[in-house]
Amino acid sequence: MADTAEALASAAYDQLDNGGYLKDLRKFESHPSYPDGVPFMYADSSGNITVGVGHNLSAHALAGLTFEVKRLERHAFAIPKGATFTTGAAGTPVAAGRLGMIAQADEIQNDFDFLDEHLGGKTNNYLVPNMRKYTTVELTATEIERLFKKDVVEHIKDSKDVFGDAFYKFPVSAQAAILDIDYNVKGGVGTFKELVAAIKGTKTVKKDYSKLTESERWASAASESNRGPPIDADRNNKIKQWFTDASTATAPKK
Image 1: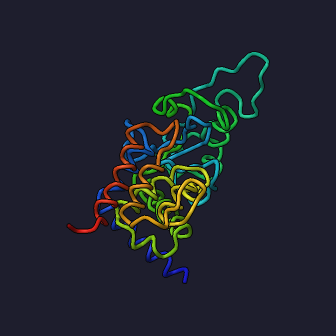
Image 2: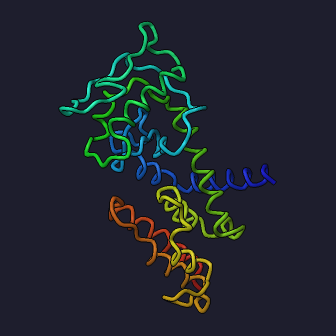
């Protein structure tokens, strides 16, 4: 069963990638300076230590990730008067002679611990490109892509858990919209109760979606897909359009 679930999710990944939808997900979850993924660790606006294409290291283990040593020392943070940090102002430097080599577990952990102690769990205004100097190790392009596919496949499986096998029969644009929300929202797409009800065609306090056609349900999903800050209008409009595309694709032929 596990092999079947993996195969179905991988096939859905390929379909979404071939349709160009994952290019948008990469863009939304990366940074304009690093459209294919940020190679170094950074703290996002909420203080989650992140790497690659929106991979939340604060919520996942570091084990199994391949980094390379790119710098032996970090730029120092300014330490507020009276404050103390276990990692100090610049953390533990990498040993001489390690430049360009595959990072060891402790070198990777040192970058994470340094950023996490100074910025973890805190709202910050650091620009992503400026955080490079506070790190010593980076993912390779191949590792960024491997990690992205692994994350997407997991979120596809999570989406399938919410909607059942029907998820794989949804219009591809609808799958892409659902995936985008699941990938980005803490708790996943299942936390969007009205959206889920609209797609499944069930009744809520707000509306009885069972009385709608499939096309009308996708149109309702479009209306219920909006996310607040820090999600911007460009991303919200794109996801709304994908649900609208699904509505158009399933509308009765005249």
